[in-house]
Image (cartoon, rainbow, N blue to C red; front, side, top):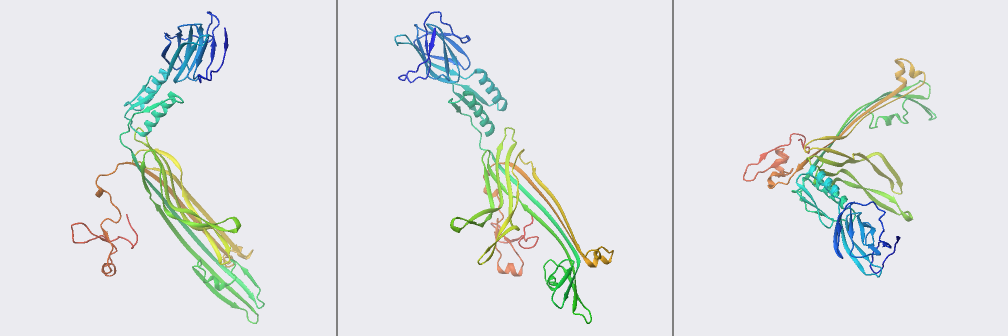
Length: 473
């Protein structure tokens, strides 16, 4: 027996040609169990990974396979062949005689392996017993039933697609009962405390020629220290030496400053399970950018409160969240100052609080996804050598400053499974039943807000329990 390969362009088959020279031709492939099929033109069905022995109606010298990725053929004898299922799909096998006549023509359908299909049915059935997996004669797979969530539907579809392989067909007939929507509530809370203490004595000696020598915190003009914003208390005294053109000026510098910053941002956003959603509340500030030929272009950068997240509702009702909250604000710290013909141009910097993570939790449960505690202390002392080291009296020849900053940041997320309401009155907004006050109410009655109710002539008073302009929850 000799084996040769050739391609028939007229038949458009990419295959192999098997020339059977004797009746004792044997297959070199291990034999597999299978039934014998007869007929000049028939449909042959086998499973992926299985094989069948096919009996031909005559002696064949050439066998052509249209798609070797679906079927492989080995000669068993001059009038029989062994067909192996390689991959799920459908192809054509033609056997011809020495004279070129067609001995047999088969449409071979390779079905997915029943073992893999059973494994898919078992896996999908464990996740959702109401979903069924069926296989077709052409190798296609159908998904039927009711999915508990969009995630389980996606997993079943991915498993079926992997089962049929490339080029296979998957029919998704399963339904998901209603789209599941997720509302995400994010709380970004920051507390920042600062403490500044400064105390010192400045000495400045000015002679008649205008030269000066300073001790302590340097001040070119002692009177200027009295007008600085940072100095809470300054004391200026002058001493003159009789008969000598020397004036000695001392400045007692004292500063006590306490600061507290409370920042709260609480954005809310709703989207469908599996879909991304984002929003931003803030603004854009211009940034000059140099371009070709010394031209100046303006680019804008966003700042404010933003939230972006992608929720996925799992089969057990839990929610997987990929969330990215951010709070940014303009700041003079780190700002860049550019010089121009009309003066200096200051480009502000941004202070940013941002988190990007993925968590899993149930509806109504909260999770602290990020937190930061920062504590910094800065102490500085200036003084005259030797004199500043004298106990008690040394305090007159030195100055010291102390600064302490503490900040704490926490970001908490809480998702909710939500559904739309049928009654619009169940939803409330901050301006419900609100009316702007008139001059009489605002000036004489000190009423900052008025709430009117339908069907009532009397106006209910609901004054703000704090300074005007602030809302207290």
